[in-house]
Length: 179
Figure 1 (cartoon, rainbow, N blue to C red):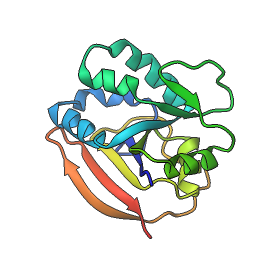
Figure 2: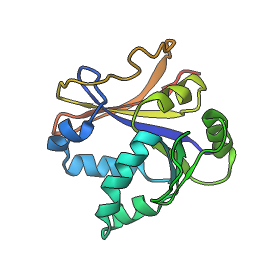
Figure 3: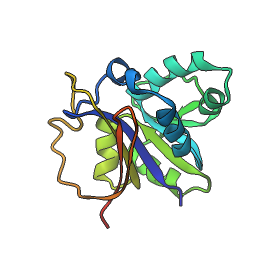
Figure 4: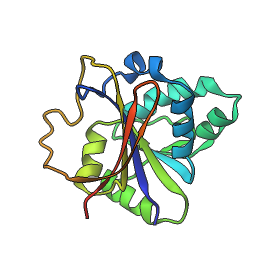
C-alpha cells in the first residue's frame, strides 16, 4: 500500500496562505536537501486545485535541471470539480476525492505526496488518509488564512516522529496520526 505524505509550509502564527511571499528568504541548502530527501520513494503528487494551479504556473518555467524535470514529469492527481483543461502531467481524481485517494493508495507504486493545505487537506484528514505530515514551521509571522480556520475540524492527535532544524530557523515537525 502506498503512503500519502503531506508537506505544508506554515508561519509561527499558523498562516498557510501565500507562502511564496514569506518563505523564500529561508530557502537554503538545508531546505533543498530536505525537500529532495522527502521526494525519495515518491512516485506521484496528489494536489488540491488551488495548489495545482499555482504549482503548474511556477514549475513549468523551471525546466532544465534534474530536480525540476523530475518534479514536472511526475504524475499529478488533482481534486477539483471545476477544472476541465489539463497540463503539467495531471489528471483529475474521479468521483469522490476521498474515495479516489483511498483507491490510489491501494494501487502498486511509490509513495504519494501532497503539498499545500486547504479544504482538500481537511477531507484527507477527516478520512484518515494522510500517513505522514511534514509541517515546515517558518520563523516568521504573517497575515492570512490559517490551517483549517473555521473548518470545524475535530481534534486529531498526532505522534511526533522527529524534528529537523535548519540554520535558517525552519523547524520541520514530522508527525503521523495516532493509531
